[in-house]
Length: 288
Image (cartoon, rainbow, N blue to C red; front, side, top):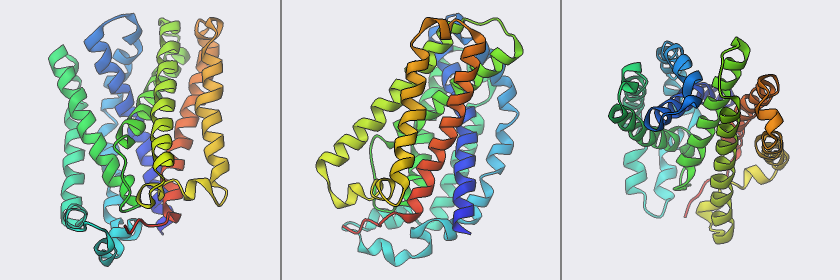
């Protein structure tokens, strides 16, 4: 049951990331302008119609909290932490459910197309997204390994969302024959690939250097029991290959080639969602 819920959570997070990532790029375009945002202008209103269904799809996770999250299944576990007061209050079942409702309401509000009408609204929506999605990543993903935390984690997962949103817009634009500045869209995806790589590597480097029990718990299962090969594969499919593919102008200037790169990146971000969630089920809890 727990693995099924974890698979659902990973798929749901990836689907939500497609929508929020497209909106991130659309908000940035509203703030900066330029022709590169044309595909997002077309895509975002369509994605807005999918948001209520995505939010309803969070219901199995909310109902299965006790089966999915260790802190919900065994409350005594939190008492073993060095400072249990705040984690015990934050990870209480009623408060957790209330926060899920707040996240859902917040995501629904910031994905209203009218928030793209002005730069001020777009900036407010972008700031709200950063807050909401960072906290949601803590609750829904990070708390799968209670006691572990990273201040970079929210930025890492949001960079993957922005990458998936950019890839989705580029792919749909290429498939529909929409006239678009393809080189700009290719550079946009390259920027998000490098942003994710930098943030993910810096998080890993700092945790590896400090080597504290409470910090390495998230990486231990990802570097053992076969998951280390998945980690290596993720680096190859979401960094090395897209980076090499998106460097030449002949790829970025050709919508047919860029379409394949975008499809590859969508698959890579889906794999990233699985790698973010599934190994946590075997993680060693942090107790000090």
